[in-house]
Image 1 (cartoon, helix red, strand yellow):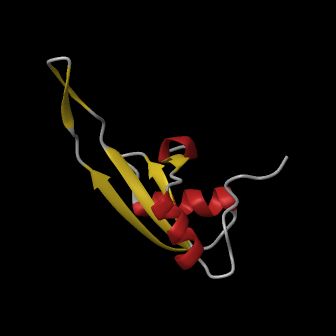
Image 2: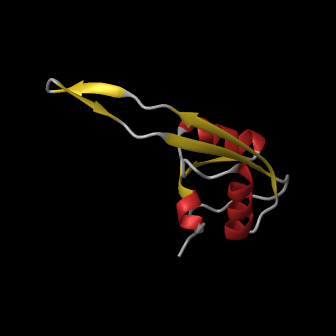
Length: 95
C-alpha cells in the first residue's frame, strides 16, 4: 500500500488542536482498510517521528434526506497518533 492510500489528510479542529497542545496527539483521516501498523509505519516514515500509540475510530454511514431523496455519506476512519515526548509533526511548513 502506498502512503497516500493510508493517510488521506490531517484533521484540524478545535478538539484535535487541544490534543496536540496538551498530549502530543495528532489526528488524521485514514483509509478504511488501513491497519494500525500501516498507519504507524506511514506516519513515522513521512514525518520522521517516533510513534508511541495509534488509536483508530470508524464512524458509520449516516443517511439524510435531501429534497425528498435519501442520501448517505461515506465511512470515515480517523487515527489518533501519539508521538514521543519532545517530538512534533510540522503540518504546515513555511516556504
